[in-house]
Amino acid sequence: MGILEVKGVNKRFGGLQALGDVNLSVAENTVHAIIGPNGAGKSTLLNVLVGKLIPDSGSVMFDGNSVLGRQPYEINQMGISRVFQTPEIFADLSVIENVMIPCFAKRDGAFRMHAIESVGNEKNIREQAEAMLDDVNMLDKRNMIASVMSRGDKRRLEMAMCLVQEPRLLLLDEPTAGMARADTNNTIDLLKEIKEKRDITMAIIEHDMHVVFSLADRITVLAQGTPLVEDTPEKIKGHPKVKEAYLGE
Ligand code: ADP
Ligand code: MG
Image (cartoon, rainbow, N blue to C red; front, side, top):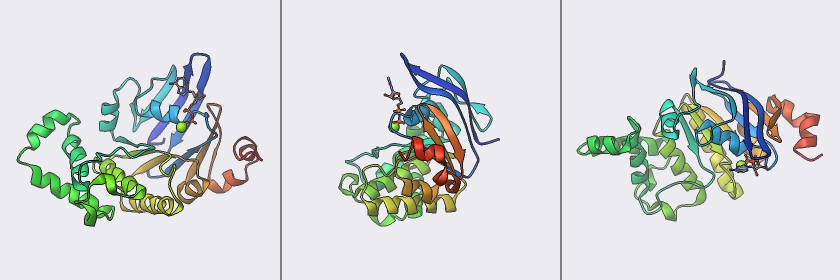
């Protein structure tokens, strides 16, 4: 049993079958990549996992509990966090403030209540945020305003904002999209470091095969909403179906 078990998931948008009978099992403490051509259904699948979309049928179990029908914040509390394609940070706030905000929200997900509770407790929150920044090698940038940072550092900051909530499953939707090579490699290193330092499972959607092959333990290839093959990177590289459907050979 994987920490994440997707079974028979279907999702239609009008006449379009975006997901057709998707089965996916993600083993705990692994990096599982989901690849496939544009329109394959990758983002739709991710949206189902985080509760932004409800599938027409099928089941999604996280650590033995059903995810379906829960609100995104509830799923987040269950231990699933998502990193967006474009970093979602508070541009006008400092780096440390950006990390303190999800600390306030962490304990019970009810941001408002916890924020009230946290008044007078800011020192503790700041210490947590600093420890997190140290962990992603950003402590020296804690007082910088987020908007002036490089794309790679914004990604690093967003990762810190996610990790400070101590997720068990991190979902990444094209984390290196639009990045220059240096920032892409930086992100690969960061994800490897994160993986080494803590027990965490990652499901990553990615177009860049260099990223996929650098990080993934398992790869699922989606094509037209349905998993085509699931295997190790070595096997996927040489798979004739994958070459045909995805690499266009
Ligand atoms: P990918 O992320 O693999 O590129 P998507 O999951 O975004 O693919 O999309 C899968 C298919 O579903 C595409 O054909 C897309 O146009 C369609 N689609 C995605 N979201 C919606 C939506 N909200 N309404 C209608 N069609 C959608
Ligand atoms: Mg997409």
